[in-house]
Image (tube, rainbow, N blue to C red):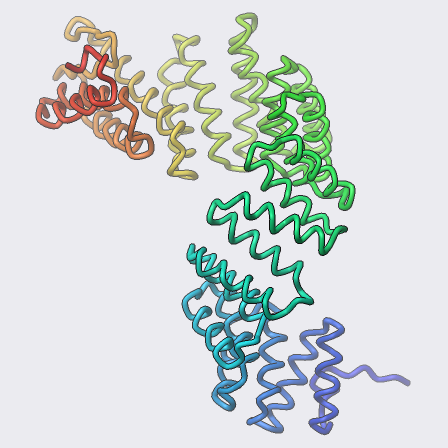
Length: 476
C-alpha cells in the first residue's frame, strides 16, 4: 500500500543535502508550497543556511508573498552581505511592493558587488528608474546590459525600446525594435511594438504591415487586431478597419476601446442599424453584457441626433440601455452618455422636464465620482445646473429678466437657490481646472458671481473671458 505524505512529513528526517535536492525539484515542478515547507525544514535544521533563506525567498515571490520574501532575503543578507544575487532578489521583492527607491538601492548594491551583473542592470534597475520617470538614467541600464551580456540581446533591446518610448524618442525606439526583430525574427511582440512605434510617427502603412506580421505570428492577439484597425481607420480604409475591430472583439469581448472605435466607424459609414442589430444579438447571447447595452444606447442616441423621426422613443430606448449598462458595470463613460440622453429628453418632455434634469445631474455626478477628470461630464453637469436655474427663473418670470446667456437672476422669492449657486460654482471652477482655456465657462462663472453681488470676483472672471476670447462683447 502506498502512503501519501504531507510536505512536512515528506521532508522529516532527511539530510540537508537531500532536502536541497527535493526543494529545488519542487520549485522546478512549480510546487511552491512543498518547496516552501522543505526550505523551512532546512532552516529549522540549520538556522544559518544562507542559500535556504534565498531559496525560501524565491518560492515566496512565486506565491506573491512579497513581504515575507523580503524578510527571507534580508535574513540571507545579514548572514552574507557580499552576495550580489541576494540583493538582486531583494530588489525584485521590494519593486513588487511598489517600494521603488528601496528597490533601486538594492539593485545598485548588486551592481556594486558585481559590476558585470547584466540582469541587475537590465531587468529591474532599468525598470525601477523608468517607473520613477527617470528615463535618461533608465536608458543607461539596458545599454550596460547589452555591453555585458550578448546572449540576451533581444530582451535588452526590448527594454531599451520601452525606455526610449517613455522619453518620446520614438524614432530611436523604432531602431531598437528593428534590431530586436533581426535577433528574434519570429517574435510577435517585437513586430507589435514596432507597429506602435511606426503608428506614433503616423507611418500608418508601415505600421499596418508590422501589425499584420504580429498577427501572422500570434493570431490570437486582440491588441494587434485593435491597433491594425486603428491605423487602417487612420488611412480611411474603413471596411478593412471594421473587419479588424470585429476580429478584436471576437478575441477579447471585454476590449472596450474596440467597441468605441467600431461604433465610430459604423456611425461614420451610417451603419447605425448594424450597430443596433449587433448589440441586440450580443445582449440575447449574454444578457449581462454591459458593453452591448452601451453600444445599443450609443447607436440609438446617435440616431436620435441625426433623424427627427421617432426621436423621443429612441431617446427613451437609449436611456433604458444606458441604465442597464451602468447597473451591470458602473462606468464613467456610460453614466456620462446617460446624462446626455436625459438632458435631451428634458427638452422634449415638458411635463417631466425637472425630473429628467435631476436624473441627468445625478448621472453626471456619478460619472465625475468615477472619473474626477472627466471634462465632458463636468460640462454636462454645468449645463444641467444652468437648465435647472432657468426653470426656476421661468417660474418667477415676472421678477426676473431672461438673458441670452445662462441667467442666474436670484429674486428673494425663489427658494433654495443658494445651494444651486454653490454647486454651480464648484462645477464651473472644476471645468476651468480641467480646461483652463474655456472662455464660456469663465463668462458663466462671472455672470453667476455678479448676480450674487460678488463683483470683484466677477470682474476677475470677465477679464479672463476677454483674455481668452477678445471678441466676447458681453464680457467687456
